[in-house]
Amino acid sequence: MSEQVLTPITQALADGTLTRVELKTLMQRSNGPAFRHLALWVLVLLCTGSLIYLASGTHWIWPAMFLHGVVLVHHFSLQHECCHYTVFKTRWINDVVGNICAFIIMLPNRHFRYEHCDHHTYTQLHGDDPELIDLPKTMGGYFWYLSSIPYWRNKFTELGRHTLGRLTPEEERFIPKPEHQTIFWEARIMLAGYLAILVTCALTGWWAPVTYWWLPVVLGEPVMRFIRMTEHVGKPCVRDMKENTRTNYVARPMQFLAWNMNYHAEHHYAASVPFYALPALHEKLKNHVAVEPRGYLGAHIDILGQLTGRRPRSDAGEAA
Image (cartoon, rainbow, N blue to C red; front, side):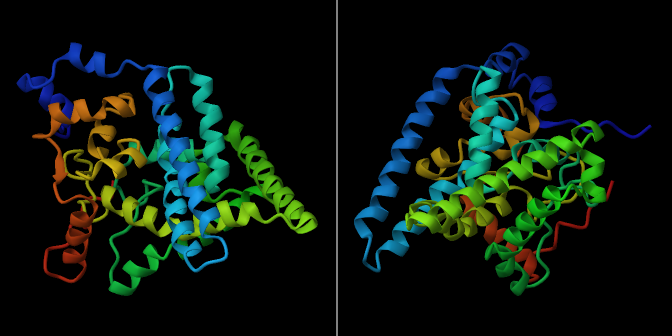
């Protein structure tokens, strides 16, 4: 029998840093914090969207669309939490908000939920983790990934494949067979929605969805790729939960946009803890998790150090 690996949660419980009562309290959910965060979120979107309007007809529209896009692509963070049902206490609100986010960033919600479940089960394990991002082998590969071109190619291919009623062997592994048709119709409805908007724009000459939505999302996605790399890339590909995930200290505006997902290690160790309780959980686990005090930039310094050979690569762990 293999030796049991202690997680940061079990270690903290064992040494008294965290009690079971405290953990149970942290897992309690409430609609209040989520609605307050969401109200401010909408206000930020209105502000960045207004910058596009004010910059119309000038070269400043591109920086404005980029800034707005950075906020838009962070709907991934909100959707991610909704998939865990930890944003709102009321379960169905998580589904509604998650699907709205999905439509904004073209990430079908039901498919993502099943994919993400396997990511939590098999974090950083080659061949099992469907969301694993490999440590690039070259600087070209590093910048190619950050360009988000591979990401969009994969998303459009995936949407088209599901619309045609096809799954890859990997998808068949993590999506239950009774849910296959649901996945297919989810993609068809999403694609129909996009086509309806595009046709409306072409017929009316009203191109606001392109200026305030689609172009900003494309411009902002490299920022999300930059952030997603900091969660696991460059960490060992092993089962040990203390080793395979980073928590990043970031500025408050970025923490707000991330819905506290910069506390990524804590989220992996206690996925039932809602986003607004993750800072408190971090205070209990900070001596038991991998923390990058320099934030997203520091994580990339680590990644680039491994890529260029200045540091040993950490991605050669066990595969199962």
